Length: 152
Image 1 (cartoon, one colour):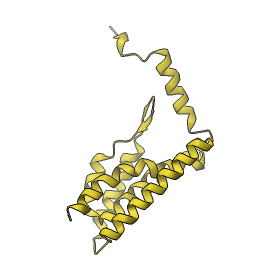
Image 2: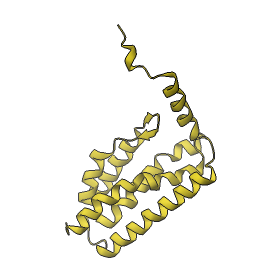
Image 3: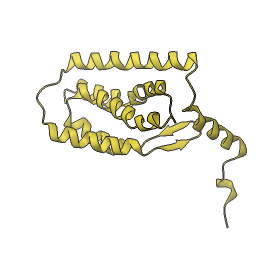
Image 4: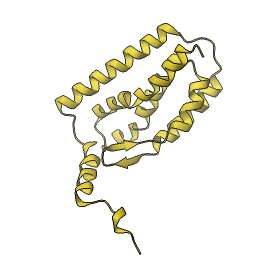
């Protein structure tokens, strides 16, 4: 017998429907300003990390493989009533160890944007919403900053 307590309520279903329809709409001014401010903070953090530990010699193959795995993982989208999530943790950790630290957040932001480009081409996502990939990549700043502070 199906456990009805696991079924989303009508209100939860409405919130999810609203969330899923958001991609096709333009950002309102408040949302756009928030995304721009978040992107600015992201790039300031990347600049600080770059200054503290600039990129140095590295091997390309591990970076390319880690980035490809990150792209595949980022393409797996799990929708929730509050947006969506992607299971990229297993791809992020090898990237963190294989790539110069200052470049890691940029690769993550680029990967998160690239996996959404097909949605833009199909008309399912407004191009301006690709800016949210930068904010979604903010999670990479913390681990990179810790590695930089620990001089890893």
